[in-house]
Image 1 (cartoon, helix red, strand yellow):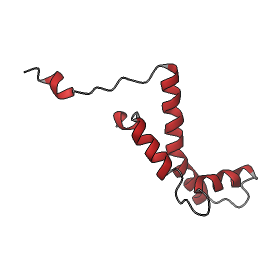
Image 2 (spheres, helix red, strand yellow):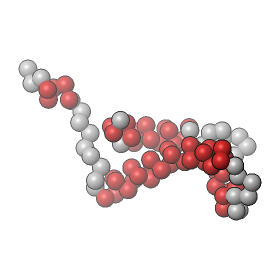
Image 3 (cartoon, helix red, strand yellow):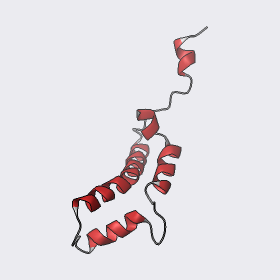
Length: 87
């Protein structure tokens, strides 16, 4: 799981698909952000859940960027099978 959420390719694809879907007439997350910025009048619990659901990929992308900039991003282990069986 940790390797997945620390994978740049996976997080970027997740942000561009789930984070922006549906794309027409505008990205869903953008509409929710505008709604919240204008006071969130009329937002029900389902709308808040929907906002969080579409914001998670972007939060992961921000998290990964901060870890990369601070140098705390763990190094990927490429050959785990070779490390276990050195034969």
